[in-house]
Length: 88
Image 1 (tube, helix red, strand yellow):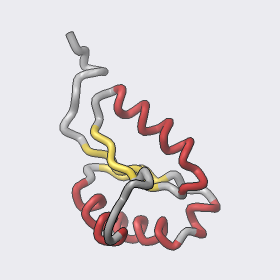
Image 2: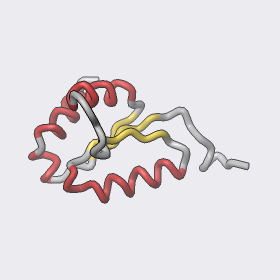
Image 3: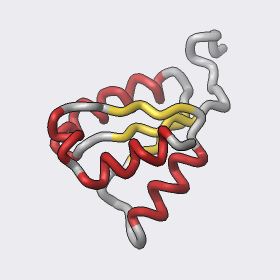
């Protein structure tokens, strides 16, 4: 039987990261999923308008984790996600 620590939750977490830091983002995603948290992140398979995807993902997320590194701060896409998140 699931325990409180492993029971699925209704939470949806978005991970915002620079692809240079993908390994760290994947490690965070693994830990969250092990605790039943739904995780959304750009895993490189997005087709279509990236800005539309970002807007929808940010809007749907209950929480957003930003893997903020110097590379993140230099990324145009990451800064757009951060701006959307702070304006949510």
